[in-house]
Length: 76
Image (cartoon, rainbow, N blue to C red; front, top):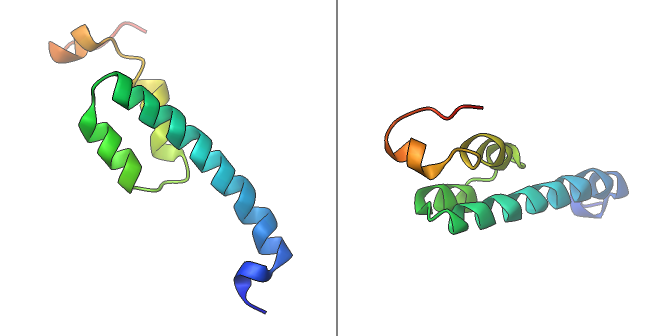
């Protein structure tokens, strides 16, 4: 039996795929709205099962653009 037809494999892969697509969509949307094409391209091409997307959303997307442009760290 091919691995794609194994019910256990599908039961494991389906939630991972859904998880990844949700976070990737949110992160890509935020990167596009913030005019950050490098982040957008990297997240579009690299698949990290949502890890890179979560890092972007919760660390980089929360930074204020005016502080990042001047090299100052944001106050959390």
